[in-house]
Image (cartoon, rainbow, N blue to C red; front, side, top):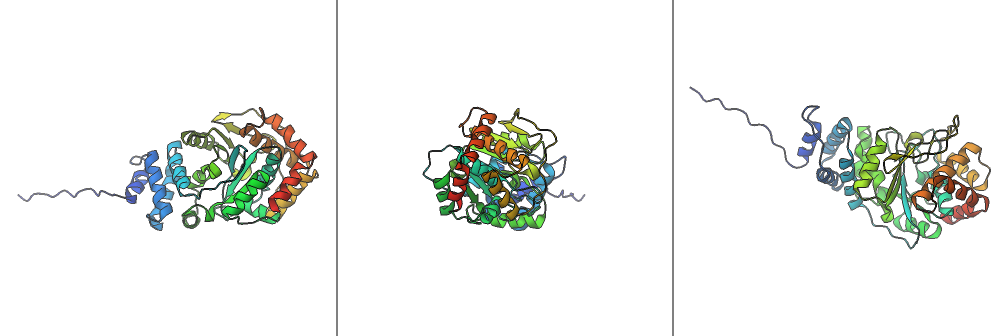
Length: 342
């Protein structure tokens, strides 16, 4: 009798093993360990994984969904690939980022918020990428360029801005090895992936406090959980317009270390659409010279007050709002903008 040979199951090694782990289907897939997520992201950033493999992995992760351990591993790989930035400052720093794909219709107010918070004593590091899908919206670097500053700041320019004013913009495309190539793959795939969340968790300038934006409710716990695993001193997850790191007016929502914060509400307030970097720059100037409308001004001061709280400058967010209003009224915020773009 002929002996039947049973085909041996395929055993994948290297990056293909990570694709298999997360992409085998609902019954066969599993979460990666923090170490595995770190290694997979390292391989993507270094080019060790091919573009096809990276695309397959990111798509599978999008379908599976990520947990805090996976996000922490991915973020740590990005931290390991990032250029080390330093600045002579005694300020406590908070790293701030919304979705790197920017704002399309909502006004991009992150730079305005950072300027006001810095004028009141916080150290604010705003980071973003180049124009990125799926939204291809306005980034903080675009707004900085429209204000007269560098639209693609170098490492030296980011360091100098922080030293001069207490606020800076980091544009990561040239400062995080492999990010630009990875962004091109993400654009071609056309879907958000866990890397869109992980890149917001990089500790530029060694910051150990974070304000990160999100769009979907389940991400507050994931982002704060990942930052806790990464050793953050304080982590704030903000549900901002279009996933930005600026709180929504009307019913602002933010979590501190995973716990929902009590914040003042003004039911019915909404930000009007204000697309474009030049429009955002004009709104920024209006906030600083006191001519912005009530909703834009209160949105900026509340979000800036949160950054003061993150840095330990004030005991409550409301005290931070008062400090920010004072910094606008006495001209410190305008002086901070002048120093930022000068």
